[in-house]
Amino acid sequence: MKKFDVPGLWLWKIGGSHMSRKLVLCAVAMLTMFSIGNIAAQQKELKKLRLNVFRIDAATAAARAQGFFATEGLAVEVTETANSTEQMRGLIQGKFELASGGFDNVLAWSGREGAEIVAIAQVSDTAVFRVIVRPEIKTWADLKGKKLAADAVDTAFALVLRRVLLAHGLDLNRGDYELVARGTTALRFESMLKGETYAGILNSPLELKGLDAGMWCIGDSAEVLPDYSNSILAVNREWGQRNRDTLVGYLRGWLKGLNWARDPANREAAAKIIGAELNLNPKLAAERVDELSPTGNLNLPGLQVVLDLRNQFGFKLPKGDKLPVYYDASFLNAAKGK
Image 1 (cartoon, rainbow, N blue to C red):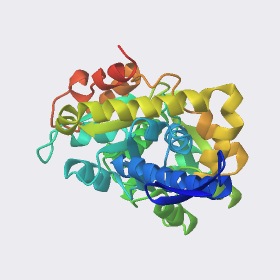
Image 2: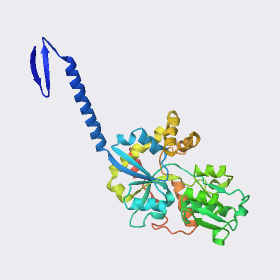
Image 3: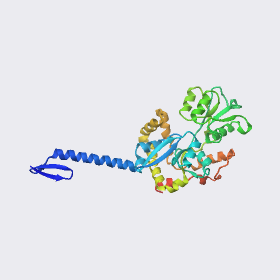
Image 4: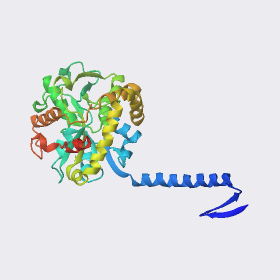
């Protein structure tokens, strides 16, 4: 029996064969240590990006769960916002790099506080806002003289609500009703439940809770604003230009999540992912998947509707009233290889 050296190991040779058991065990241990170290190194190398949302979309949830962002070298952290002001100020101040929400916020905040905010991708193409009223309200005329709930008096929910009411003969400027700022959907729902306000636009699942409590839908925005843009992705343009490769990589990962979630073969799995994220029942979870934009391309006619509505009610825009100032499709085009 002959002893010989291999760095870090003592091996014994009997005749022409090695003591294989010890060799295998050592080799396995070394490979395991190497693999763990390699995985840790890869995780450490992922660049952190912060996304702020009102609620996470099904494409982002799928991209995280399926590892599409990680493939692009990114670790995406998602946080929820309490309101539009918090989200836009956070984007301007660099508290996060991306935001998902309404295009109306881009219009209201781009050019304010020293930053240019732009929409870069469409999360879902069009939105239908349902006007929910208390049980004692039977007709539109019953809302005359009543207090109605909005998150704030100059945001998308408020402007859409005003436009729908105007179509039914109720004008805020004429004093037909009072618009009361109540903040988040939860706070609006609470004020309606208590009878402090009589109507408002609510999001799921609180809209469903309102219906269970005896409230009902008197109408929706589709009758007057059928092309109104839904959620978009937005960035501070200056940050996007400085970090173009990172942003394009993010959009590549997000597009993979979008395409995966919209594939009929993955619909059930995608619904389970977003359902777990938002604690939704299967029906609502499937709706979150179905509402995704087919391509992620900006819905320019829908964005124009949002801009026109803000102009209609006399809100001056810091960057003027020309739509191209408020979006930049170049990042998404690059992510698509265009």
